[in-house]
Length: 95
Image 1 (tube, rainbow, N blue to C red):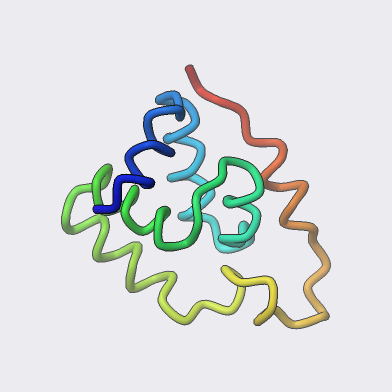
Image 2: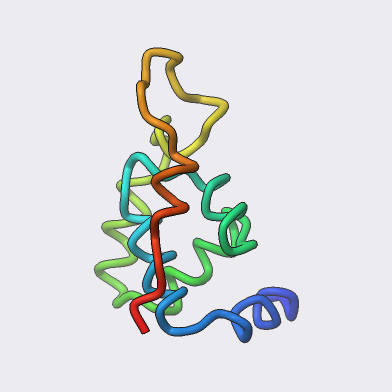
């Protein structure tokens, strides 16, 4: 794993990591929102999920988000009526 990833992870609290995991599981929260909130890119989120989840949970999550249009703003339909930025912004650390 790249050293930059470990530097980013070091500054996150356990609550922040928990919030990233929760946002990553949500269909409505895009990877762009996660990056805006905590500074982790999509590949960083994948690395974090691989590190924090059990193997079977990671595989389920990865299958779920692979190709999912709602996880990327650019792929979303204009008919979607929610603001993923506000969803990501209401997340607070659990610790």
